[in-house]
Image 1 (tube, rainbow, N blue to C red):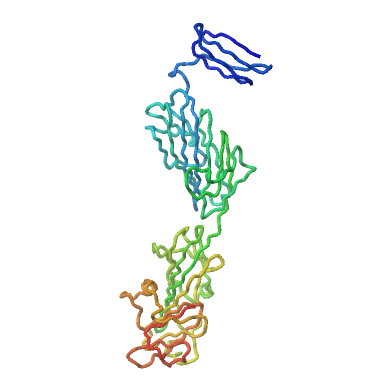
Image 2: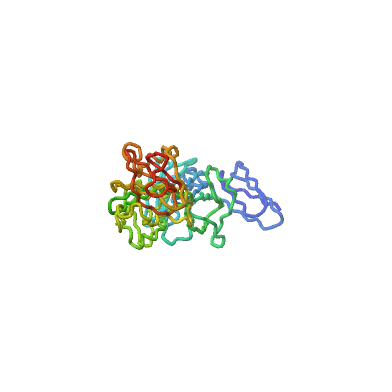
Length: 437
């Protein structure tokens, strides 16, 4: 089947909708069009071709969308490349995903943008009409609601575009597990993360070939894991004990919102809490009587400083050299979802001629040469001149018992080794002894 007809227009636009092919030739009378089909109805549309200045702009859009899920917000970084196929483009209307807000929008051509009553519809007006290409970079953010368990990505629609294609990349998150919800996803297809042009640590990648599209993602907050190094400083006075503890917490994945303090004597009120603060800022940390400590979304190493005191029922003079002991437990951070690296205890005394010694088991004594420079330099153990006080003992420990003992009458006080009885001086005449638990 062949159809041929003559038009008196020199320039025409022809769109053949049925199967076949067409030949357009200009002649003296105008334009000769020949359509060849396959024994079927011929469906076509033609119109006079407008002048370049009269033609509406025809343009295609390619979008690259990168989604980052942080602890308390979601960020979209997107690049849209617009290619003008015909005409000139002096403005664009773009519908951004809701409920995201614009942090920044940039283009490689001079422009201005405005937001109307519909906060998701953005108008970009170019100072000079675009004839070839323009690149637009977006950064959008949205807060994460308290019980939010889904993330819905839709649109990023450039209104009036002839074609819209693009890729969506989901970056790996320390704080969230993210997975597609196929039943709620439309016109989006999963691809290999290697097909994403920009380098990054991606968990998933998708592609779309037109508007409208919708990508639904299930989100679940990960259980934070961390390691804990604990440093205790116990000082005995004439009638009281002063305990200072540094919990060095290093997040391994996720963001830490709270930790659980395990300390039986905390809830019983045997110790008076003087302060619990964040090491880096000195700000107070909220705590409850059950031992829960609320942290301000820690995602990097920091310290919890705890200071507490308690009265002694008997003075050191009343118990020195006797079987009386001062049994108590030491606080620790729950290890159900963490890993304990090391626990160090230093004991000192301001009780005149009396010193504290460790009794029991579960610790390892460290000699002076085993004290690392980093340990000696810690603020909790530093006396100001970079050295430990002469009357001190340090140990890496589990909860133990401490007993006061009268120091030997000598010009150089020695720390009694735990394996000796009270009053016997250690043959190792060191000013400091450290044990590791």
